[in-house]
Length: 186
Ligand code: ZN
Image 1 (cartoon, rainbow, N blue to C red):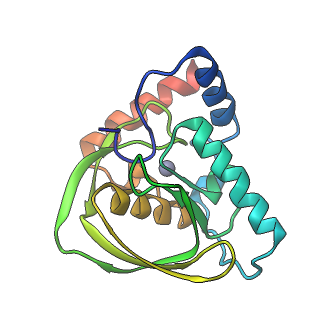
Image 2 (image 1 turned 90 degrees about the vertical axis):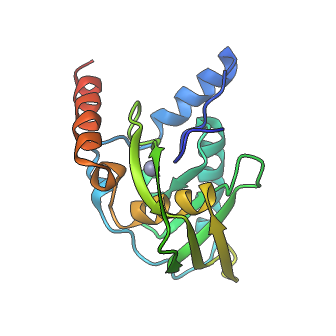
Image 3 (image 1 turned 60 degrees about the horizontal axis):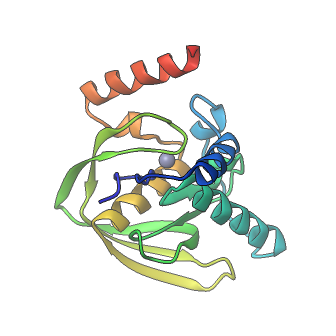
C-alpha cells in the first residue's frame, strides 16, 4: 500500500535515490509562493504543453510520486499528471474540473512532493467525476474512486493554490508546520 497523496514508499537503490533527490530539487518546495497562486486555463494545446507534460512525467517518475501539478514546477497552467493507482499508466489532465463528489468521505494520511516529510490526515470525497482535456485537447471524462479520487482532488487543489496543510485537522496542521519549520532551519 503506498502512502496516500503523492509520495510512494518502498526501498530505493542508491541510483534511484539519487534520481529522486535530483527530481525533488526541481520541484518547488513550501513555502514557495508559486504554490499559493491560482493556475490559468490552458488555451493552446501545442508543443509547449506537450513539453511541459513530458517534463512533469519524468519528474514524477523520478520523484516516485503518484501526482504532480504544474504549479509544482513553477508553471501556472491548469495541468496535472497522476496515476489512478500504482500499476496505472500516468496520464495528463488539462483544465480539469470536478463535476461531482460523493457525499461519502474518507480521512486518510496524505503527503505532497512539495512538503517533504509531511504526512497528515486529509478528508476527501471517496468518489468523484472529473471532466478535463488530454494534452491533445480531446475531452476526457473520468470516474475515480479511492486513491485515484484522492490524488485528483489533491492535484486540483494545487491548481487553486490550496495545500494539504489547509485541508488537514488542526492537529495535523500544527504537526506539519513543525516539520516544515524544522526542515527550513536544517
Ligand atoms: Zn502535492
